[in-house]
Length: 263
Image (cartoon, rainbow, N blue to C red):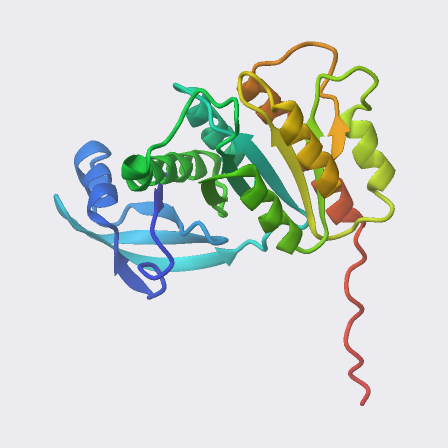
């Protein structure tokens, strides 16, 4: 079944139209016609099975058959990623969706080669958001990651401080640093909700000053293995490990007790 995206305000009704770009893809590229069934996601946990009522060059109207609401994963996974150049950042955006990252924070750190001028910020965010949407459609992830930044490390850490029960690790090449999986396992008995966050440096890694800033925050230095990984590879590996642990922790959270109906 072909999959499309519609913002929550657009798809809240029982009958609605796709936005122009999605309608054009449905009618002109895929040649979908009235009676065809499609799946639509809103990026906020809802998956809709719908039937096409009318299909034109710039407008496709659909009727909702069924809505499925997927709860937001708990614990949430947060990736704090320094800006990268070229297609490396696009890869991280795409794979973050596929791996279920709940929040993606882009960092403007000291050793970043890539920079985003203020005049380009709005355009860049539009492009990045579209990359997230396309990845969500491909992977059938009903939740788009919350995209923040680019921002300074200080602002990013302040934002994490405000979050409820965030564990933060920072990928490190220092010798003697424990493996990420082992550190997460050591916390599994005490953390059942909140967020799991990992910070990945740029091509030149975080500066000593930035690493001190992480330590002051309380972040734990962790290893992603004995080999030196590219920044985008490190981000994908870390997100996969955190996602796996988050799912296992979520499975261990007791279900709420049923309400007493005897009263």
